[in-house]
Amino acid sequence: MKPLPDLDLQLHALFDIINGRTKTQLLLTAIELNIFDFLSTSQSAESVAAELGTHPMGTRFLLDGLAALDLVDKEDGRYRNRPGTQMALHRQSPAYVGRMFSMMGSMAWMLSGQDLMFDSGEVAETMKRVGFSSVESSVVGTPMMLMELDIARK
Image (cartoon, rainbow, N blue to C red; front, side):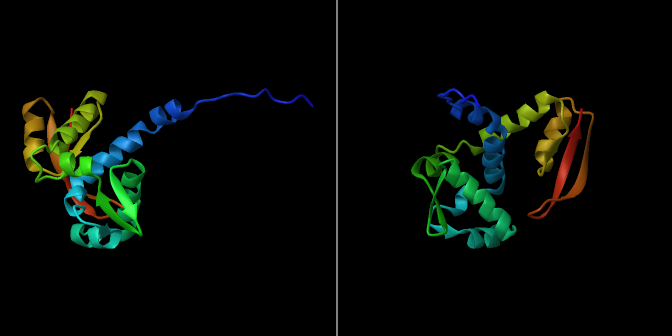
């Protein structure tokens, strides 16, 4: 049997590309839920879930994802914002950029031609003004909670 050649494969860049959407969705979900506002001090997933009204297991998965992205620190099952995250993603920070990131995420969906979903009537009204043909409200069940969303269609 012929041995396989030694390969020095550097797959990190490829994994970053393929995981890009997952990373983006983790960040946008955390911004939408205002997770970072609860993590100025060390908190358990259960306490964050209780504050948000979300499922503890789903909240823990989200927080673990944010820890994997180095946005929050996890120690002894408790989570806390990293300093840069506190500065950029806590809504009371003068350097808050979460709303800008949310809008960038929404624009990416709009450019892809997909239906857009928002949980804010103000945003849905704006979408009608910029050319979406219809906006309708709908209750959508997610693994973490029921959400009333405005759905904009091109």
